[in-house]
Length: 115
Image (cartoon, rainbow, N blue to C red):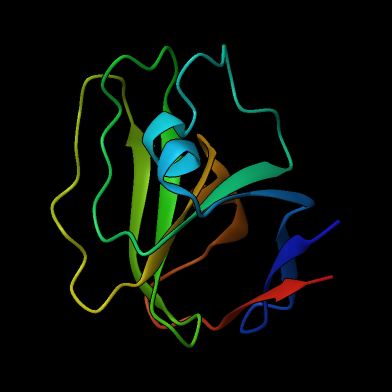
């Protein structure tokens, strides 16, 4: 089981990562879920913008480039919203609301997927 780690802050962000790499898994994302449990995250590959259409809960998002450097953080993205594209991003981690603030993750931080 992989975890998301902020190397800059020496802090674990997420204990369990679910990956969305196929067309179907990227399309579905978190749709149909009632929430995203604390400590869990969804990693969407090849993604520079997200939406929360049809979702039932608020999320945070951390966009990273190919080297896992944070390019953009979005806090408290409510249902029926969307983000503008994150310049230089390659993928995104969708996380429970409050995770960005609690982890103090910010643009420029170096992340790592461990495990």
